[in-house]
Length: 105
Image 1 (cartoon, rainbow, N blue to C red):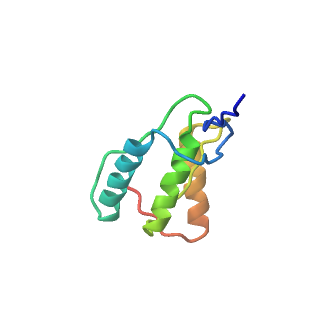
Image 2 (image 1 turned 90 degrees about the vertical axis):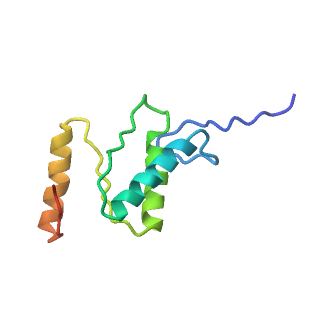
């Protein structure tokens, strides 16, 4: 019997060899980043889904695109035991304490 290798190998945040079926999402993210990098307003992007469907992998890929284009970003991970606003407030507070300049609209 021939060994069949399944390209889907679940694992938290593990980057697969091939990011299948995400081309449209990555193009949308690139378009959004181009708008933001050039000072234009655009819609927010929200990625959601069940555990293990590749949200973290997708965001990791988008982070690499951001870094390649020298766009400033901040990775904020929501905490399970706190509200979304608490997670953002904590990160903003940390940035303020380091003397970072923040632009909040």
